[in-house]
Image (cartoon, rainbow, N blue to C red; front, side):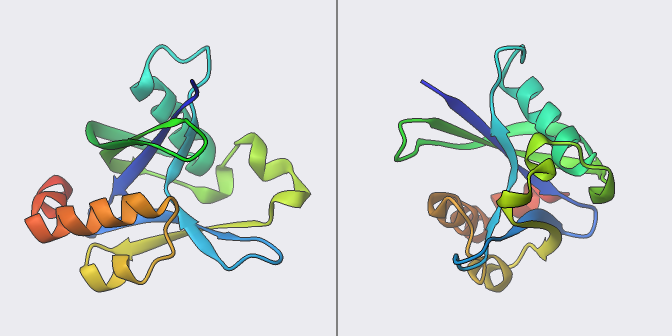
Length: 145
């Protein structure tokens, strides 16, 4: 079974980083930084740190498990909160960025508010619900400080 990892990357500005995906014929949507776990990855956290480096030329600390579920393709999705300490979207190196058929990837900082998170078309939808629940419980903002 394939495993995937994603990061809720929290900034010092009480925001989180999302990637806006713009593809022809599809409504724009947002995803969190991350991707598939590869055979070379020693564990889930190593896979996530690799994805952060590839997708946003970033560094993160304080990875903490946040949420997990099985998606409709039978893959286990592992979500972590993390403090993003550096990023440079211009220096990203993931293989998806070299393909012309993948559409646009635009990095955005989103405020950690119910209104801002609620307005996202965040994929997969289950993570949006988990984020809003954690925000309501105060655990997301606690992880952000």
